[in-house]
Image 1 (tube, rainbow, N blue to C red):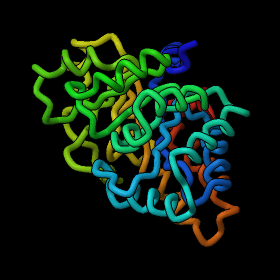
Image 2: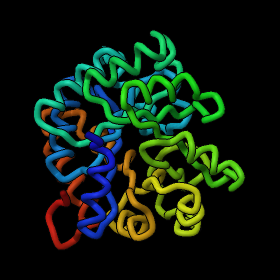
Image 3: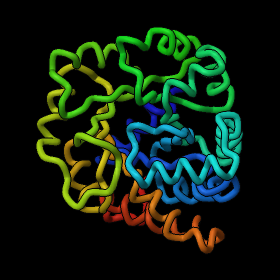
Length: 272
């Protein structure tokens, strides 16, 4: 079973891009995070990208840094993140990607870490600070446990590196549409269609685009060029804006996710 490939295939059949949602596991606490994930998935999210809370998230802007801080302060750990995945698997078979950093994979042994991910129900692994040239051990562990690998292409990546990145990826390619870190942006980065087309010359895998996408109109525009659209900070802000009433966060998340997903399928209240 390849839940990632199935999800992208279903989106293609429906004539749209897949909607990929980033949420930090355990933000702002375990129970609320589970409710938030449930609400987002019920809204029609195609792929759930779960951030593993880390004290030094180099690729993340302030919104996601603070989400990780809230999760860590609530007692979230990699082990608890796996528990969250197991709870999600009780009600959803949507593919789950771990968005993480190499220290968290390496700390308890790469093979053991990846095996634990598989046993919990994780489908793919995106290790932000691990280039394909250094990823042999992680690739081997993922292959042994049937976990798909996701690697990043940036605007500054020369085309000469794309074959190596494409060869290392087995799930999809994540195109970071702008230089810098994650965060809401008022305007999309330029040249997204051209960048996606260039990447596609080197891989048959889906190409998703993220970083800075925060409105339904932006989702629609990116979705016209890419196989998937990643929204993170715009969803994480829903949690930040409702911290005074945590019980209200899941419903607010579901509403916001539906609004964004409508950019891909405006004729329906939710995709999927």
